[in-house]
Amino acid sequence: MLATLKDMSPRRRRTLARWTAFGTFGCILFAQTANWLLFRNLGQPALGLAIFSGTIIPLMLAGPLFFYLSLKLRELAIANHRLVTAATTDSLTACLNRGAFAAHVEATLADARVSEDRRAGALMVIDADQFKRINDRFGHGNGDEALRLMASAIRSAIRSQDAVGRLGGEEFAVYLAGPCDAGAIAGRIRRAVETVRFRPDGTPWPLTASIGCVFFDAPKPFSELYRIADDLLYQAKRSGRNRVVIAAAESAVDPAPHVAAG
Image (cartoon, rainbow, N blue to C red; front, side):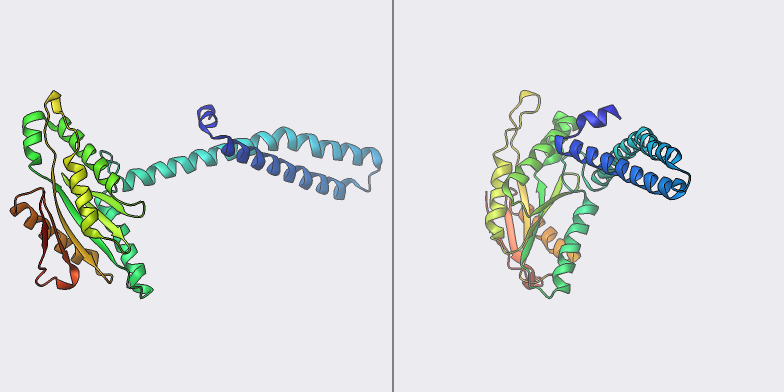
């Protein structure tokens, strides 16, 4: 309890003090009103004693009790926040996990469909090139560090309203919300990963990523967008890696992708 109080910001402490004061005042007011109604016909000495006890007892009991309960509610809120974070966040990279990312994109697209808003956007699937070689040569600890660096590079290249998730292994995804130059952002991501300084066991090692990107002018199901982006990712891999392959969702039958080389 003392650790929770110590970790509180000044604003949170003031809020805790206000709730304690208001709760205690409410208890005193209730006790005073009840005592006055019960003892008003018993004479001034009895009424005075009742008013006195109606002030002292709530101060002694309600004040500490409200302080304790308010602090425990704060601890519960912190615990719930940590549980939600653990359930939705990839612990290694601090990105959304696969389920949370898919749910976020689905909810955004569903809102756009319900509101009949022809909201543009894009979905990218990003995969680290030849990642198995890192794990095989330097071990999984260095592989984890490569993923953390890659996630940081991706976040540095997107906008505040965009979402990034780790889909599993060395595969990430980015959802670009609203109108945007998806090709330019994908290019920034590719270059950001390429410029990461990765030195496992003191050995310089290049990091690159292949990106499949599908953009759209109207909301479509997440599963359809992911399928197209994943196909474009494999085209980027087959084209030589460290590539961006981008196409419009509206031409899904024959995407006619644009390949941007590294």
